[in-house]
Amino acid sequence: MDNKLIQTLIKQHNQLKGDLGLIFPLFESDKTFNAKTIVGYLKKFQIDLVKHLKLENGTFYVQLLKEMEEKGMKTEDTEEFIGEMKGIEKVVVAFLQQYSDVKEIKDNKDKFEKELTSIKDQLLIRVESEEEGVYMYGGSLI
Image (tube, rainbow, N blue to C red; front, side, top):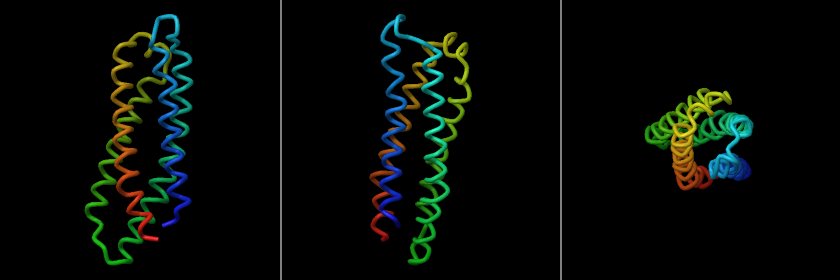
């Protein structure tokens, strides 16, 4: 497994966390809350997420499973893990679709903030699971 690939994925994780981190200060007061700005930040997050998932799902996981199979290793647990990560991905994508509109965010400010916090927490779980699990494991297959 290419360590450069893993380092790129980790950098992308940091970018995604940073993208979401820009939104939370906007909830500090009615004065700073701006749904239009939030939609812009969510679009940036979505662009970065699509780029990341393309690399992770289309390259990293494919290579990881291939290398495991070539070494005669069982892949069932890793495939199950990948499935769990894709479940988180579906939740995040649904959230982004639901809140792609300024009016939707304005009309549901409290609900949006709670759901955004949940999305952030799920993203952090995914990031930690990958970085402490399959990325380290993939790096050891070099």
